[in-house]
Structure formats: structure tokens, C-alpha cells
Amino acid sequence: DTVLTQSPALAVSPGERVSISCRASEGVNSYMHWYQQKPGQQPKLLIYKASNLASGVPARFSGSGSGTDFTLTIDPVEADDTATYFCQQSWNDWTFGGGTKLELK
Amino acid sequence: QVTLKESGPGILQPSHTLSLTCSFSGFSLSTYGMGVSWIRQPSGKGLEWLASIWWNGNTYNNPSLKSRLTVSKDTSNNQAFLKVTSVDTADTATYYCAHTPITTTSFDYWGQGVMVTVSS
Image (cartoon, rainbow over all chains, first blue to last red):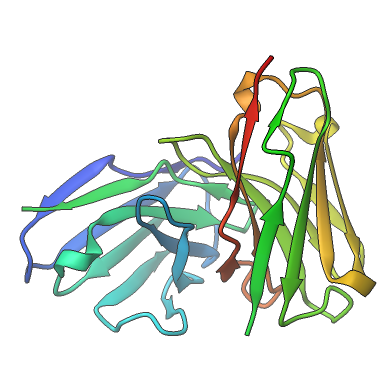
């Protein structure tokens, strides 16, 4: 299994920039994707293949990285961005990170 | 416009077999490159990929559950199915299906999910 590790929680103020990291236990090439999930809702694709913005997603969201280290950046953060963010790899089957809960101060 | 919707029994007893249906529109599972994946999420916890099926009939199962999972499709009726055998309380979760294009292998459209409770 390819294990993905994320920090469990972050707190930022609206208008700031936040970076959410994801580290893979082995290289996943560029096959890393990011999802946003709000309470009671299904996950929503934000970024696919490390750095590609999914359809309809605001340009405040961006992704970077390759190999084992990846980052989702939100700049600037808005109140509506309060959610849990999951990374997912699809290079070796599919696995998800444990999620990072983003809270606004 | 791609949409997916899961359906299932709601509640079932331990040791029974869970049968789920994903009904979708906006794509065909007979078209090259199309796939449907199954994911579950226990309440308050993370996401777990379960299985995927491709347009050509190839299937992939999570190794940790492999022997308990069967994924299949009915192309004519735009449906995909997941069976989980010998369920126990640890299988209680919301189950999602998602559109999976081979071009990205991401899950770009998700159903709303169906809650499944395993209880005696």
C-alpha cells in the first residue's frame, strides 16, 4: 500500500495563504489528486494530477509537487473554505490521506 | 452532465452480503476510458477506496478487502454494482460511487452517498 500522510488540522485567518501538505510513502509520479469535503457532503475534486485545476474550481486553489511530496495551496483563504481536504494517489491502486481539517480563525 | 446515485439496503445484519447499485448518467461504461469506483467513509472518519471497474470489464479491488468484494456493471442500464460479503459492524459507513476517467484516474464526479448500517 502507498500510505499518504497529512497533518490533521490547520487554522488560518480569512485572506491569508495556506498550504496543506501530503507525503507519500513511495513515489506516485504526478498521480496525486486533492478533494474538498464539507460536513454532510460528498467529496469534490479540486486538483487532479498534482497541479491541474478541476472544472469550476476557483483559481485560489492550486497544487504542486511530484514524486513523494505534494502541496495544496489556497490563496487567499475565504470563509467558505472551511472543510476537510484529502489527498489521493492513483499511481499504485488508489489510496487517500487521512485528511486535513481546515478551520478559520 | 455526469451524475451518479447510489442505492442500497440501509441496514443489514452481520455475516450477510451487502449489495449496492450505482445508477449514472452522462457517460457510458462501454466507452473507452470510462470507469466507476467505489469508496466508503465511516462516520467522522476518512475515505477508503474499495474497488474500480473499467469500460473493458477490468476490475481492481482494495487488497485489504479483495476476497470480500465483487464489482460488476450493466452497461445497457448504466449501472455499476458492488457486493461485499460477510459484513460486520466495521463495514458500517457511507458508500460512494464516483466517475473515474482513465485520462486522470481521479474521481471527478461523485454520487451523494448511501448510508449502510450493519447491526443485529
